[in-house]
Amino acid sequence: MTVTARTATPSTCRAINDRLALDLLIEHGPLTAAQLKTLTGLSRPTVADLVDRLGSAGLIHLAGESGTRQRGPNARLYGIVAERAYIAGLDVRLGGVEVVVADLTGRIAASGTLAIPANREPTRAIADVLALVDATAARAGAETLHTFGVGAPGLIDPVTGNLGVEDFLPAWHALLPAALRDRGRVVLENEANLAGIAEQRFGAARGLDTFVLVWLGQGIGACVMLDGRLRRGMSGGSGELGFLPVPGTGRLPSRVDCEGGFQSLASGAAVEELAARHGLTGTAEECVRAAAERDTGAGAAFLDELADRVALAAAALAVILDPGCVVLGGETGRAGGTALAGRVESRLAELTPLPTRVLAGTVPGSAILDGAVLTALDDARDALFGSPQR
Image 1 (cartoon, helix red, strand yellow):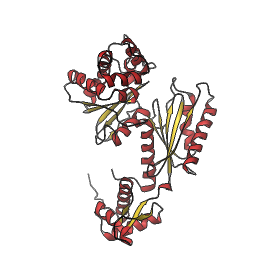
Image 2 (cartoon, one colour):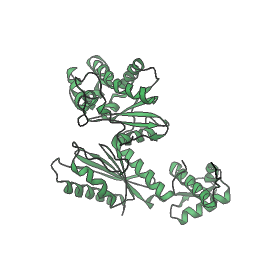
Image 3 (cartoon, helix red, strand yellow):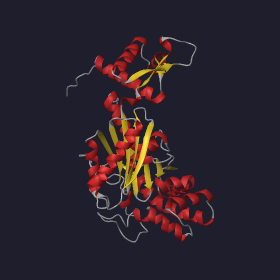
Image 4 (cartoon, one colour):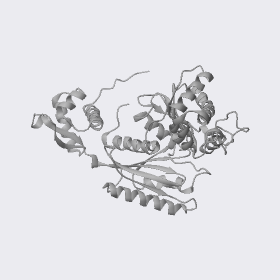
């Protein structure tokens, strides 16, 4: 086989340098040309050309002067033109949707929520969601939205990028991506995957290239991150942990029903039933949080039994994927904190020889919505800044 050597062209080098500088401005905020020179390792003339080029492209602007005593050209601060593009993140739920709009730097400019009744006609539901998006964008001062990051339950077809039609999902879910594509770019992702992305960027999994997030909420799911890449599987179904056959349910799941699988042990309803047997009342999140805060008596016994259940799924993931770290996300997983995570880690050490840390999710608020925003920002920046060298 003949191997042809490739030489980087001047235009390729400029594109790489431009992206490097833009990423640094996103990470650090406004910088002087001297600071860009130090951080990039580029020469002074190269940085000067870069600044002129990005300014002419409308991607950076003069953002003021540094706080040093020095004045003049060397003190000029250059920053991203935040209003160059706005993005929207959407968390699509069974009973409604939450949306946030952010500028190109990631600053959240506006947010809104909408409840959608189960009997709402699909086209009316879509119209209502689009009206919410428009109103939120208007409050943010955005005339148009560049990219939509959308998190939803169910399977995302890796070929078409569309949401699979599931019996348990409202009909309007499957129609929403196409409606949004008429307005901008759309990145559709499973909700558990978005939560995993958020935990990796600024949560419990920060800095980890390989880990698994187990989503424990009303529903069950998982995000699989291996060697820095999100693994979705052949059909987009990687992480459908609710269908995992486990002991203790009295039956097996089927292709159309996850009851009898891990869903029957760890869903919100199952956790509430377990809590009631220990004399605790409230939602799964409330019961787990209260038990974790006190960690004594009936609450401690409840956490012990819940950890036994969660460890079954964690062990299956550990022996197949060897992720080294399992993050407990979702309302239930996060509410359990270190009290639940520590118990699961101890059980896991008894079930598998593979060392595996177990951590509670730490992303505040909605990890799904945060992941949707991050995904939309990544896509918009790649489109505007040029794809990074990976």
